[in-house]
Image 1 (cartoon, rainbow, N blue to C red):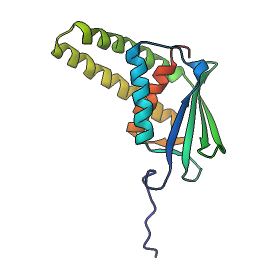
Image 2: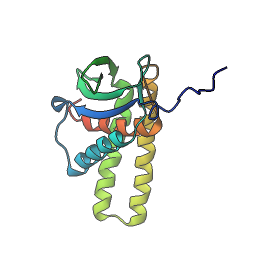
Image 3: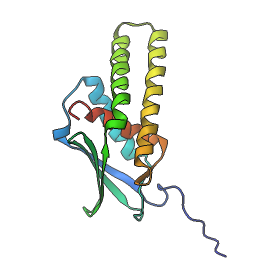
Length: 167
């Protein structure tokens, strides 16, 4: 019997995202608020994430994220440029939730300018709920392909949302 325990946390095992590249052809410039959310999501993802392509050894990974022909493309490579895997996912299961999230974000950003703190808080609670729902759908779509935790899925959903204008 061995004393060593298998590492379950991909952070401690050395498996993590160290960079995220959004395909410029997939992105249309948006409002300053959405641009800010996108930048924060990328920063937060790089700072702390749980990201492990299924069937591949722990490594430092770079994620190229794009929308091509209405499909979400996750191109994964190591930080030394070795290709790992590319996963192409249909955007159909995410389309409705992205539209819902877009509507509630518009309401939220408008409320910040004109509403009372309690109204802003109520809209923000709804926004977080829809965001969580989208994150769960994304985790389900990635199941068996890329293992991520909820925080990583939430930040990835923010980036998927950022790509939806042209996607």
